[in-house]
Length: 351
Image (cartoon, rainbow, N blue to C red):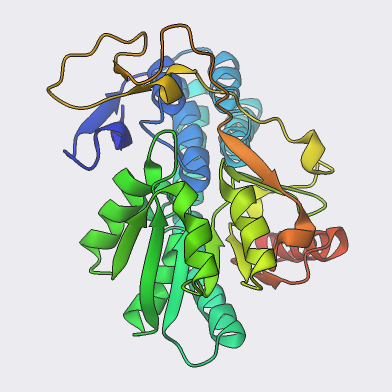
């Protein structure tokens, strides 16, 4: 079985979610009980291993897991890595038990590698912040959630802010609440409070006034997929922040592992953007309150209201100051620089 922290129950309560088969994990991924690009890759790999250990159809499980969140490339990468290990062992030994063991070993290796990548991203990101903003006292704006809840380590963009906090160089973390599911309010604020960071929560549409007041020194976000040209898909609301940052001459920095770069996706227009249910916009949920909405929430819009609810938006590379990975930072962001970084990463992995 696979035991997860149910992120939909945070911050009110910390509840474990037990997945005994791949379909249960697929539902956990779709419901956002488990989410965040790097963690999805890890969960996907463990899901393949779980299916193999339980004697289920591994190919069918891998396909279902890979399709659970189409925008997040790490999910696909993690599933394929464990699947490849399973197939290689099966061909070599003909033993399903040995193949299941190989899939589990691949998942555990990915888990360890992600924790190490998180540590290195934090170091590279902090070095870049200090280079761009000498003197410390950084006031950083972040969007969605990119801390330990999305990673085998301490996260991606949040890990950089956390490193700055530990070094005494973070003055304020501005946390967008992040509509429609409030990952910033529920999850990033939860992590910031647990680590003792100075943070302030704001509605997404208040970010512009912060920029105008000169209260933001840098924007740090994660990514769910980075196209070959450097276009970045992240939680919806990221692109407007990039536009604001460019107008106000504020660095806009994306922090993600190399596995988030997808060389098979040529540009931003080629990224499939997941569309989520309209009730996530037209309803709100609250504990211990009677709910009458189609999605189990309290209606905040007239019955029958249509909602536009993309899970992500895409920021073009010209609006991105730098992409920080465990292998270092790319700035300016170009297809050539990203390809070189990915090639260097592959060389390190095979050496």
